[in-house]
Structure formats: structure tokens, C-alpha cells
Amino acid sequence: MSDVVSSVDGSIRQIAINRPQRANALRRRTFRQIEAVLDAVETQGSGAARATGVVLTGGPERFSAGADLFELDGTIDDLGFDDELEALCRRLTLSPLPIVAAVEGACYGAAVDLAWSCDAVVVSDEARLAVPSAGLGILYNPSSLARLHARLGSQTVRRLIVLQQELSSRQLPPGAAMIVRAGTTVETAKGLLAAHADSAATAATKALLAALDSGGGFDAADWQSEREALLASPTRRAALEARRAGIGKDRNECT
Image 1: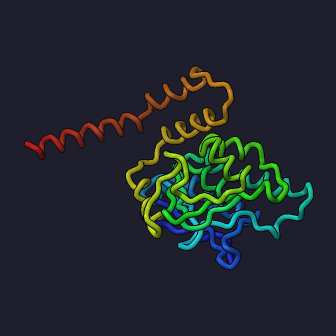
Image 2: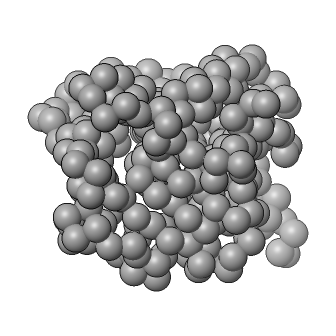
Image 3: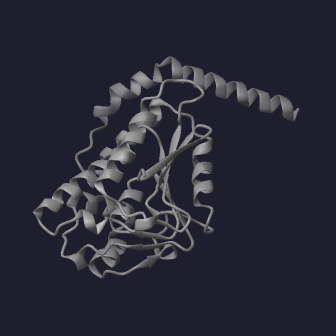
């Protein structure tokens, strides 16, 4: 059985972790199958069938229990698991498509990293988060820790990893996630993506934000050529004209 199930709802592609017998625990195969779906979605041609956004979810009871411990052997070889997880997280962050995580129930360990690599996270009011890495004698992947530190904040990460606390969704800092009624995370995530129009500008904006998140040096001049190319593109001009036409129509309907 596949570790993930992919489905389509209009222009939105949903990727669901599907290992209910293992509490949706993550293994290398899971990472590779998620990447394969992203490969297919991102290389679709233009047209009505092209996806404009992705929802990453688990099941109605839990998002994921984190790393499948049967994938680990307690040696230096476990760096390979960490490397594949980080590669997928970076892939989610750098994908040209907007990606929203929909989190119900338990979201533990590596699953927290996976969810907060997305552009936005929708969590249920019954969700629980934990990152038990220190209790397993692990210094969390520095790249992953830096991302969580940037997106969840220092105090929340310290509670999750240093103090080994399990937190409810209500204990997350403001802006870290959108909290909704249990059972409605996927619907809400799709709603966030419904009005989005796929564009090169979205991909460029995501790349710029990822560069800012990385904490490296930033020089606006490095992005100027891409900015100018987008401003001069026929796609941008067509979008502007369509928006103007819509404004004109709205004004006519109000008179």
C-alpha cells in the first residue's frame, strides 16, 4: 500500500499521509512518495487541469506520529533519515506552488518540521504538538531547528525540544498557525488556496522569502533582474488588464 494518497479537488492537489496502521509515522519511502507527487504537480503543463496549490495532510484523527522508529537504528547512519527529511522540507519551502498543511490530532517530531515547512499551517483546536528528539539523545538537525526557530519562535521551540513539553494548538504563538474547529482543517486549507492564481510571481516571492528565512546575507539588487522580467511579462500585463476589467464591471453593477 502506498504511504501517501493523492487526490484532486478542482485546481488543488491534496497529498495525504496514509499509514494509519503506524499512526502515519514517516519513513524514507513516505518522503520519496511525497516528492514524486510534487514532481508530477509542478511539471504539469498549462491549462485548466494545472494545480495552483497543494494541501498536505494526514488523516482525520492525526497528522503524523513523526519518524517511524523502525526506520532508525540508533547509529550515525540515522543521519541519512535526517538528510532525506530536510531535503523534503526544503522542497516544500522552495516549491513554486503555495502549500498549506492541514493538521488534525497528533503532530509529533519530524511531522512538526514537515508541517511548518509549508507556507501556512491550519491546525485543529484539538491538535497536539511534541518534538521528543532530546529525550531520544538526538541533537535536532541544525537546519531544521533553525527553520522551526524562525517560524515558531525561540520560546515555543525551547518548550517543545528542551523541556520536552507537549503543546496544544492554543499554546502556539500568534501567527504560527490558523486554529480551526476539529475536522475542518482540510476544508479551511483549501479555502486559503481557492482564490490563488498560479504565477511566476508566486514562485519568485517564495524563493525570496526562503532566502530571507535562511538568515543569509540579503541584497535587493540580486532580485532586480527577475523583478524587471516579471513586470515586463505578457502574463503580468494580461493579469493587470483582467483585474481592471473586473473593477470596471463591479462599478457598472453598482450604478
